[in-house]
Length: 194
Image 1: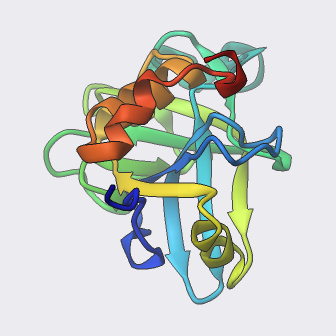
Image 2 (image 1 turned 180 degrees about the vertical axis):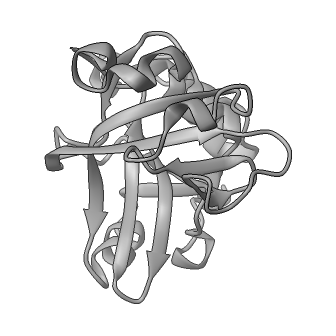
């Protein structure tokens, strides 16, 4: 039987997804999909997708709530600096850098929440605000990938704004892969119940 192909550290680029493998039991990341924002010699930064909180965007950042996709709440982006807000937007076409947007990959941009939200109205397909982020120090993610904790796969702009919750998104991302990795999308949440 061929080995399960989960990618390598070379596949980790802005816009890629880190998909938690069943062996990863850390409660911060078990069953998650992480959108990679940055990866370089100083480490890796991303946000966990599909974890809505109960905190309404309108209660904290009222100017941004009308641009957010449903549900209009903060999403838990990871265990690091949970009092920090990061915002990602899908901006089809060419966005003007310096207009409060910084390209991550393709049509996905980091949004400067100190900018004027009215300047972006009409240019976005939607945005999502994350509380906190996921971060790895140099060498940490490489070790976790080598242990089989993560698969690295290409992401899409739709992943960032998906209305699927964590487990549903995890299955959807794996289902669009090929080979044995796609088969994981049909595995039971608890393999011992199989």
